[in-house]
Image (cartoon, rainbow, N blue to C red; front, side, top):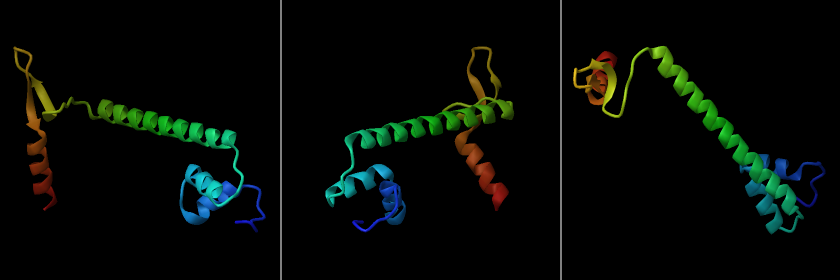
Length: 106
C-alpha cells in the first residue's frame, strides 16, 4: 500500500481486499498509513445513514406490499378472512399457508 498512487486509498484498499471502508481505514492505520479520525468518523456517519435509508426503504416496501395485498395478517394468521363478533380474527394460519405453498409446488 505504500506504493499506492491513487487519491482514494481507503476506497482502493476496501475494494481490493473486500472489506468495508471503516475496516479498511482501521487496517491501513495498523500498517502505518495515516488516516484521520475525522475521516473515520465521516465513514461511521455515512454507514449509519446508509443503514437508516435501507431500513426505511425496506419498511416502505413492506408497507406497500401489505396495502396492495388487500388482506390483513398478524403473528398467528397469514391471511385474516374476517373477525368474529367478539373481535377475534379467523383465517389461514402461517403453518396452513406453508402447507398450501408446499402442495402447490410439488
